[in-house]
Image 1 (spheres, rainbow, N blue to C red):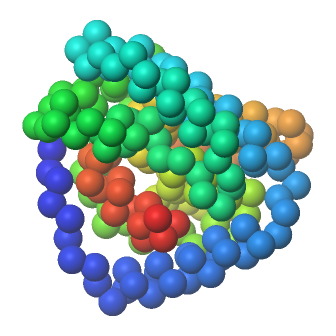
Image 2 (cartoon, one colour; image 1 turned 90 degrees about the vertical axis):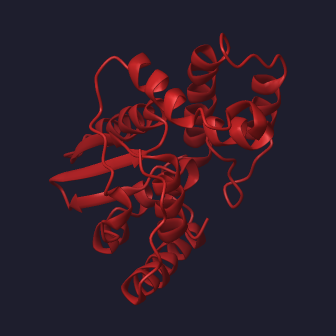
Length: 207
């Protein structure tokens, strides 16, 4: 799995500025969707499932408890990282050289196989989709699951390093559209490398 981060291009910089303006607009307006409760529930559930996979080989009795506290006390303007990222940053020596193996374990725990996109960080930001689907953009920012390709009303490709997180994001977004009795795009969950995912989040969400 490649973890090389390509140098930012001028086009990337422009995309990031435009997307940052769109995200700021989404954060400035109170979403009709209860994004706060939604993101906390998703991150907490993902953490519990991810910990179930990590615990046998990477035990840490207080890791999950501390993460749940972090989620419950977080604010929408400062949402916590995904549990996988939190775990690695908390104890990097335990995960050094093993991230690829862990991502494979997490992928195997998901009921269906998600496509792996090594090129996900080279996809242009779907600014128009984020602008039209402001609630989707806000939710994706809160849980750090970017949309890397989209056609409004047709499909949206989601990605993250943690396939459990991407799967939960798809379910939450579909549930939201169903609650509105509105036509939903086909949400396509995928996975990518952890460095690619971090790069995409920086570009899409300035985080």
